[in-house]
Length: 336
Image (tube, rainbow, N blue to C red; front, side, top):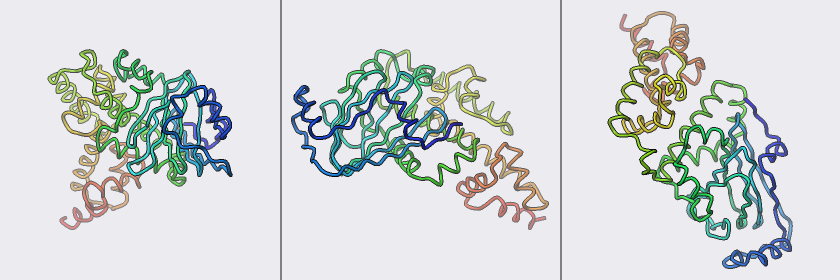
């Protein structure tokens, strides 16, 4: 895992990124007149830009804002695609490539193309940067639909559901939470799981944005049910092993995206969430059948099901069952 707060290094994701002062801005809109209408004039004066950057592996989260209205021209490197989240309702609207960027939307920024954006004073911009290799491997959306999003006015989508709102809020909180970043920096397993969760949630978001109906992207309901049934059997058979969405999809012979669809349709949760719940239920059954030293059994049972972080296991267990695992074990011992 590569963790860094080195802003200069992270700026290498951008081929060019230039904030404009008033004179540069006026010169630019003279050349691009459609951007002049409905634009708030940039005021001269002290300019303060804040930037939070968090990289975990090949995925990045960027949070930008300033005390002044800003205008920026930028382009992205060939290896990445950027997904920009606009702020919630109640914030002053920004403009992107000459058009309004409404609140509670996500916009797609493709590589090697120049974009321009205007943001009012006090704005907040949250960006998720995804490697293009992953997007290509997942075949995130039919090529014809994906190419449409090269046109700016076809590249902004309202956040499609409450799950998408929650996803944006989690990213926003993480990029501004130094203690959580340090925890992920120190716990490689947790960081890897978090990266997979981010990509899982993003996959559901972007396919919902496109409302894909192309036949190539659809899986018949019966096929999804078969994928789901095969997956849950494999999970039960390998419940003590470390499991991931990509590994499970590989064993089944399907794509991670197809596996996501299958679980979402049949359970309403992601494969990772289902796996965690199954492991926690299996651990609870084991605890209810055990009697011995409390700490040793909680730790050994968590390890038995490849939940190697005891603190995180206890938190997840209590969240699901309303009591810590040690309490379950004490109740078991009391019955003996």
